[in-house]
Length: 169
Image (cartoon, rainbow, N blue to C red; front, top):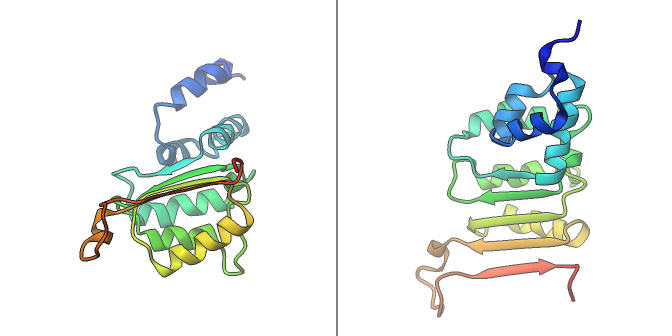
């Protein structure tokens, strides 16, 4: 028996899904059925993930979302080409950066090409992870630094912006 939900065209479902944040989309609809998984997979392939949800806690991220991302079939992690991290939000940066690489320094997001990190502090784990990503994987990197990073130092401006784009000489 076909339910009414199954006759709704993909285009309409995708329009409805765009009103959900990536974390709500995963927690609510992933594993519902193969069709929904395929639609969610296509959204992450196109839009990537923005880790700046103000209501996304460290506990939810680490215990629910990361396992969903890494243990999904097909792999959601392999579909993600773009990520954006906002340093003002609740999820600790060092934890997120550790999530980008596994223990063998293998990239957990093999198709990641663009990375935007805003309002960040330079830490050793960040520098180590970015070094590997720049060398082997990324075609675009944007960093903006938190203004507190420059307090006490003698700089002529409050913010710095670094952009790497391998596609343009």
